Amino acid sequence: MSYSDLIIEHRGPVSWLYLNRPQALNAISIPCMGELRAALIELRDRQETRVIVLSGKGRAFCAGADLTGALPDPTAPPSPKKTFIDVATEMEAVFNALTKPVIAALNGVTCGGGLEMALMCDFMVATESAKIGDAHANFGAMPGGGATVRLPRVVGPNMAKFLMFTGELLLAPQMLEIGLVTRVFKDAVFDVEVQALGEKIAGKSPLGLSRMKTLINDSFDVPTEMALKSEKLVSAKHMLSYDATEGGKAFGAKRKPEFRGY
Image 1 (tube, rainbow, N blue to C red):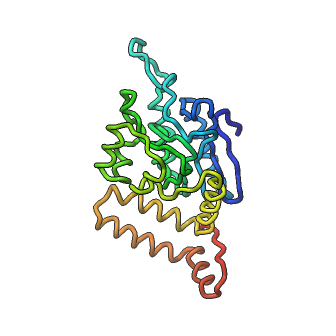
Image 2: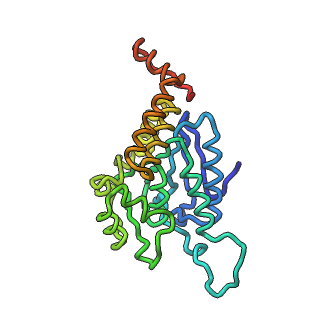
Image 3: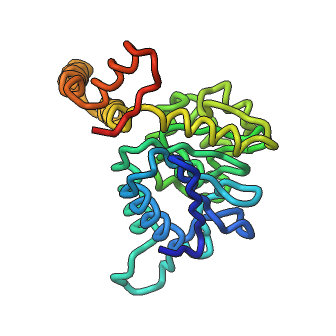
């Protein structure tokens, strides 16, 4: 499938998905979100892709929503046409259901809906020069892509409120200190470092990663005791898998395991 606002590059087991609206700082529009949903499904179903990296072309990861297409007309009559939030919800549902690891590679400005999209990924890495923040308050807007839910879980409620209430954009090293970003790389070697990280993760058992991701995500919604029971059940089932057996054999033979994902 061809895309107007996206670029997909396959680099071995790591697939890079780029937002490609650099003239608009990769602000996300309704058509762009539709394409992003389709691209994520494509990469979800592509067997060769073990890790997905989401990044942006130009000097921004994503500067948020494209407000020219996001604001409804309050004087317009009711319409069956999908709204910005409708399309965003459909895209988010695909993000939420992905079992493959997804890395948000913040190559530049990341704010508003861009930050919310990064929070849908499993973790964030960034260039030293990247500026990151919420920014909804700067435009009298409200988060609609999960920031009020996901951001406090990552940085705590106090810092989440600070970022949301002030609308400030902080440099990536500052975001590293509060735990929003997990790694910061120099701009000149950013893609190389992220690719190396993606390949490292891609070398693990796809089945094991998928199951760990699901357990972590589900653990927020159930009591601790139930989450612990789920982990034990999944772990016991996993020990019967090919990948678990292969991992044990490789360890004993002092060789690199060759995981197959089942």
